[in-house]
Structure formats: structure tokens, C-alpha cells
Length: 200
Ligand SMILES: [Zn+2]
Ligand SMILES: [Zn+2]
Image (cartoon, rainbow, N blue to C red):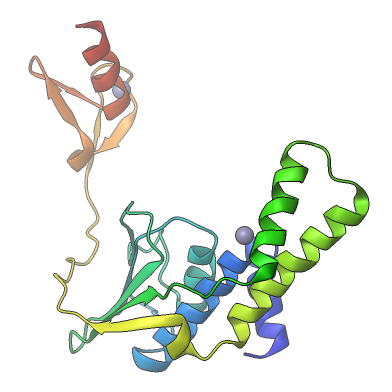
């Protein structure tokens, strides 16, 4: 990856971190094996985490939350599935457990001291340096060592449709029809529905 490409991803996310590096590598693999940018939902990404790396995936692959071709499953796993609509090719990348070394312990101890407010400027600088090194190590690792790559047959989600909006009968705000809930014959938005639930 070219330095200016990485710089653009870092700018989008706000900082460089190991999590972002994981997403960069997942996106790299997806672009190599599945396809380049998704102009119109032709590639779908399913991410099983909502950590930093998802920003790299959105930025690099064009699978974005707003386009509807980024699906989040709240499983808390560093696992990323990429699906190509045209032929159904789908890969699930699962991050392999990475060997721990001495710097992991040092990093953990420094993090603890920073949290408790005991760390001085030198320790903070060292912490930042280890953090950066961990990210760099992920960028330098061969992709095959970083991810276990599975070929999967996913249920391909239907393309996003434009839905009608209907007024919530409690707050009066417009709501996508598929998100309305029925309570005592009234059509309510989810927050009003849940507020009603609490009153019962
Ligand atoms: Zn981050
Ligand atoms: Zn409402």
C-alpha cells in the first residue's frame, strides 16, 4: 500500500491504530480477491465488529453504511465477509490469534498506568510508540498469516429499496414504514413504542 493511500485512510479515521491496520489489511485482501470499489452495491461487506478497522473497510472498499452494502453483526469478532453479487463469490476473513511477545505485556502495563493517572510523559510517549509499532507490524505481516480465509455461501441480502415514510402517531415524526411498531392499533416509531412499553 502506498504511503499516501494509508495517509488518506488515517485522515478519514482520525488516527493510526492497530485496529485500523487490521481493517486496512482486510480491505486489501478483499480488493485483491473480490473486486475493486463498489459503485452500486455490487460488493457487500459483513463486519462482525464495530471497531476502528471498519472505517478502513468503508474507505477502501466503498462498502458503506449509507449505501446499505455494509452490514454490521454485533458479534465482537475480528471477522469480515466480502460478497460479490455478480457470481456470489464470498470470503470470510477471520483474524488469526497473533503471537504475544514481551511488548504486549509492556503495552498492557503502560495502559494500566495511564488509566490510573500514574504515567509520566516518558511512559506516555513509550505507550504511543508501542501502539504505533503494533499497527505497523500488522501492516507488514503477510496477509495469509494475519487472516484465516474461508470460502462461504452467504445469503445475499436484497438490494436496498426506497421505502415509504409514515408519520408516527405519537411524536409526529416521519418514519420508514418498515420501522413502525403497532401498539393498540396506533402506528408508532421505535422510541415512542419503547416509551409506551415502559409506561405499561
Ligand atoms: Zn482507531
Ligand atoms: Zn414517535
